[in-house]
Length: 177
Picture 1 (tube, rainbow, N blue to C red):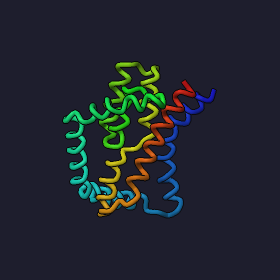
Picture 2 (tube, rainbow, N blue to C red):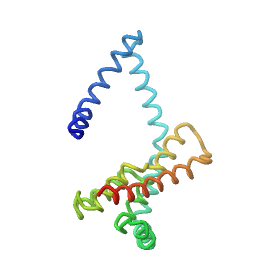
Picture 3 (cartoon, rainbow, N blue to C red):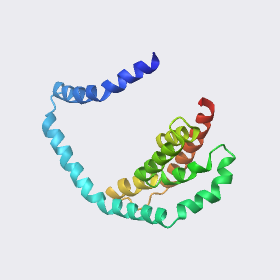
């Protein structure tokens, strides 16, 4: 029953939002089309500003994976992560997620293909994917787009949140599955 309700809401959510926002804007006497095109112009300018930061972070991620540093780090930390019930196979995903969403998704896809979507590893990887953020990407792109050079407390806070998400994913999966 509950899952059917969630499925119905998820199927209807985006079409309703896409319909309600312009109707609400029209009701509030907003020139919806003009505001939309102005926002699109601003978005294009932001995209142009963030390209150098995006290229830099993608090159760094490629070097990190290609060098074998990710696999070495995973092997070194597997005994420690085993203490909290996190299989060693998930360590590369946990390290890749703050760096790259697409890299982490590739690792999750590989884990799900290898171990199965209903396996503890597949479920844990999926929950980790949804419980963490692409921290370095977000900081590089969004802070770079508004010319913030000193992230101050943003990086430690974001990495702490990622760690909390990883630990919570492991604990929740052990409790639920």
